[in-house]
Image (cartoon, rainbow, N blue to C red; front, side, top):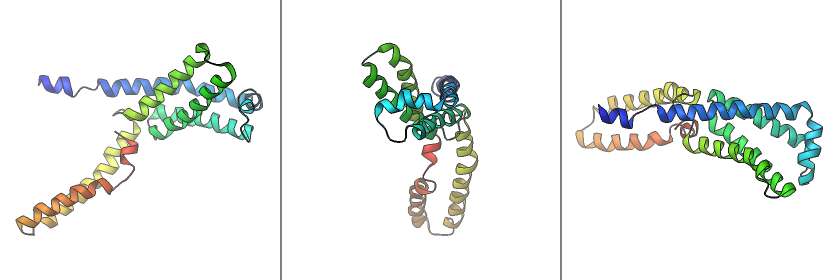
Length: 185
């Protein structure tokens, strides 16, 4: 009883939920601010880096912040959305370093967003996410059905062959849906 309380708490998943929701909710307005005056953003932030197609890249940055923030808040495609935000934050940190040097006042918010999305990518979306529900309801349900049908057909075989086939089915389970580890932890 005590070990189940210590080792199987929901606090880790609750902490990931709080991190996801606050990061997404606080970052989403930055994307909308970029959309308000996209040409001003392109002139101020993209053109100084001498990147091609500054207005298009400005739209990409805004979209990654808006769509990525929603994916963090909902928990759907969480690692993909966090990866999009990570790319945008990487370019923003590079811009801050190139234009202003190591100015902690410019870098602190960028570094916080950067570390938040790196943590979300590493930890996964947690149990309080749409990714977890999709993984549990659709992916694991179909994997369990496939394993159950294998066990039924295996029972008719000899006992020595049964052990070998069960080992193969557990190894094949890894390849049934290649993106399940990307969706949920």
